[in-house]
Structures are given as C-alpha cells and as structure tokens.
Length: 453
Image 1 (cartoon, rainbow, N blue to C red):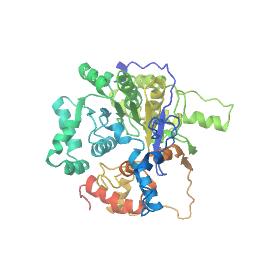
Image 2: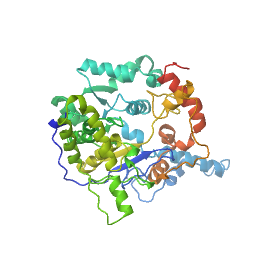
Image 3: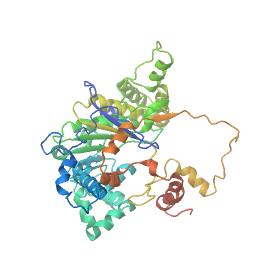
Image 4: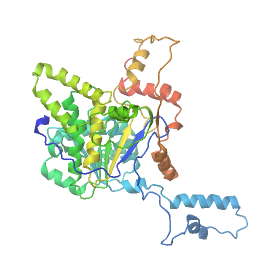
C-alpha cells in the first residue's frame, strides 16, 4: 500500500543524466548530456604527450627488410593499433564488478544477465533482487526462471558439467521488493550490499498499460526513488542504470531529442507552449498525483476500486499528454531520479519494442507473447484471415525521428572486438529474413512450445 510510504523530498537538480534510446534507426539514441564515459577515448601516451600509437608500434617493425611491402607494414601497424587499444574498455570495466539487478526474472534483465556472464565470465557476483517468502524459494526461482531456461543453454555448453557451479557462484538471490522501504531487504543484507555493489541496474517495473494508478505509481514512479535512496548508501557505486521506455515521449512529434524530464514537465505542457507561447498549462505535480491516487483508492469500496483506479490512471495520463498509465508513471519515475540523484552517476535507457534475439545466444529466443506476436499468431492459426481496410485510404503517420549521433560516436570508439561482442547496429539486420525465418519460428518454438505449428 502506498499510504505507508514517505514521499521523498526533492532538493537537488539533475546533473549529467545520460539518456539512451534504442529503436529501429541505427542505434536510435541521443545522449542528452555531455561527459558520456569521458574517459572512454583513450590514447596511448606512455607518459609523453603527443606520442601516437604509430610511434609505439614502429620499433616492432623491421623497415629495413626489403621483402616487407608498404602494404604489409600498414596492415601490421593497424593490427598493433587494435591490439594496443581496447576501445571503450567494456570487458575491463565489467571484470570483477559486483552488480545488483532488479527485474532479474523478467525478459530484458534475463537477457542482460546471460550476456554479461557469457562475455565477461570474470565478472564479480550478480545480486538479484527476488520477491520470495524465503531463501529457498528465491533460489528456486533463480534456477527455474533463469538458469534452467533455454536462453542459458549456450552458457551450459560453454562450461559443460561445471555450468551449474559457475552460475550459482555468480548469481546470488536477495529477498526483496521494489515496492517496500529499504527494497524489502533485511538490514544486515542491505548493509552488506551497500559495501560491495559497484553497479546497480533497475530493470524492475510494471508494464501493464492500464494498471491501477496506485499500483503503477508504487512500482514505476516511487520504486526508482527507493532504489536511488539505497544507491546513495553504496560506498563503491560507479553506475546507476535505470531502464525506462522510449514511449515516455508520449505524443511528441518531430525529432525526439533525448533530453531529461524535469519535475513539472509534461507532453501536454510542451504542446500548449508550441501552439501558443502565452498559453498557460498547469505543472505536473508528482506528489499531488500520488496523493490523488491514495485518496481515490481509500474513497471507493473494494468491489469498484480496481476499475476506478484503472480509469483514473488513464485519465491522468491523457490529461498530461501520455497514452497510458504505464508510460505516464515511467516518465514520472525519470523525473524523480533526475531530481534526487545528487552525485549518483545515472544512465537512463529508453528501449522501444523488444522482441526475440536475432543472433545470440540462440536465434529467435523469446519469452511470452509480445507486441506484434498476437497478430502474427492469429494469422498463422487462421483465426485472423485478413484485415478489413480501404485500399485507397491514406495512412496518417506522424513523423518521428530519433537523433542518435552520440550513440554513433560510442560505436566509433569501440574496438573491433567490442563491436563483435557488443554490436548493436540494427541496420545490419535483414528484417524480412529476421521476421520470417527467426522471429516467427522463435515464437512458435519458445513461446507456444510447438502448439499450433
């Protein structure tokens, strides 16, 4: 219940909050602030300013050997340059780091955990916040919902008979709840994590579009506040990564720059200002929205409260320019993070539609029926034989573009090895082949388990 919560005070303005989005453009993102991994652009200088990679490499090449062509020299120089440069240093950064992750049994976080363990096996412990009644139940959830899933088969093959030992040495369940004070953790465990954790990833959330307003607020808006409060106690924290959604952009049109939300911002307010600079529109008051949800819930009988709270969430979302309760409360969660982070290094990512894996660890892996899948499945089963449309009708599409230039710069800074291991260039995907030969078979195999094939 929200009534027992103390609403956090907002005292500090945001500094250098980084936002990333991933969509069907190349990387579909724009980092709104500077200093994105400012140390990532590394030069080899050996303590001497101006010493280049070429200077480091040249003593290794016998230029007096007339049998060595200039092309061969240049190729060797390039090879040595790549050998001496680790690009962004992703593997080096993750090696030995201790993670705390929420939403670990969910679709997105599960893929992330597998990726980390497969590409950086020397990572430290990965603590997973799990809702469970006791430690045994929490461990059982990790085994059933993470370790023993098809997604982790590649890791099982890589480690052979020792794969269970490897995974259990890395994945540590922590009983907790994002909707409770201190994340529902016992104080002793909380103190231990505060001393150990280097990286926090908040992938927990309620993704139901028309969820009860109070429930969605508790998870998507106040949940990040609780997690951030814990993060401020972490002595070694290097990164607080929050997973939001691209659809916090609501009804915005045109080029969508990845700028942060400030308290009081709303899509409707932006639209009103663009249409008439002199027109006033009320500021979005997050605390008032929480109080409204509490009052509304307490004012109705149990038989009507669920429907009423769902209707209230949708009404408030549309009032301020968002499509549904989910994206409205996620946007307010971003606002709270930006205004309460103080000196915590924060990255907010805004992924759009998330579907099956295209290549690794196995092509077409997916969990559940997602986004476009109900339409595809209905058509495949013959339930949906066609869509009644007017072939002469014009399709009204609002043009939206994501500025992804800063993420392209990140790609350019990556070494070739990093691009192979952590590549995220969606333009390299043959989408027709992916949908027909990877995604649809993946849905049939992993989601439907062969039913209806």
